[in-house]
Length: 431
Image (cartoon, rainbow, N blue to C red):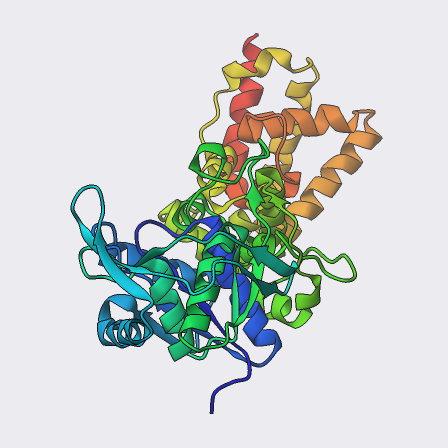
């Protein structure tokens, strides 16, 4: 039994999956999910010169990575030639097609619309008028169907009820509407999403900030964060919610009546911010699983969980992990900072070394207790918190800022921490 709502996502394997196409795939998925319908995956690979199995495979992997699934497909237009031939026969029987050569002598089959004006219903824009539609190709000189023709024939055969895509297809929809009617079929409901604009106000492209989903994967974006952000490009939640834990939560909250036709501006900083929030939300074990391939086994042995937790607050994308880890455990040269420390630092560091000789704070809880006791000692002896913590942070990492002090002791371990602090103290005494 065919579902009452059937949408389709129809990528062309002539390149990578970019943000606009990924958004279209997502909105088709959400629309079908909302109505308990079905979404079909159709590969529009009739461009013989540019379509490749490699591009198709990468696009399918990207969709799977995003968590977008399909009820049917993939169907490939390159394998559906008999269906298109039958539709050509139907048009020919109505004397609506003719063959002619272009200026280069290539012969193609053209569609002669019985009417050249009309309108179609758009779910976001209302009635859309069109006129002056010229004859257009339905079968190219190499025998393959044109995009507009194949899309219509496939939509009819697959019983597609809703076509959701970008507004750049509005001119195609006029031609397709005439083809549906010429074939004696009712056109589906169209929803043309507003354009995604770059920061320069022009349509998003490679020139003004667009990137492929593969690029975002390699840069360390989370699929749930990218899905979250794409959903906000042309849709808004009735209560203004903007953070959705994953695709399942987004699907439950998604209301198609909140779709809009206005352009949406792509803001890379907002995407980074959303991704950082999703990273901070991950359980430590899950974040470790996602960062380990990037870190390639460089997490400190036996201290992997606390090292990941120490990086989590400052991590905006997963690819930040190697840098953040080196800021925690990388080598430190005291000569680079020793001159900016007050003279009292040698005494402060000496006290901490002495305390480390008496105990070994291994866990994060032990480290927090240790730091609390060091603060209490500083207060009792008239040492300002900054004059305790700043020299310690420089001694342990060589940096002025970073995660909570207890993380530094827990990640480095008491032995390494003691060595670094003693080395910094010795450098101060040499001045």
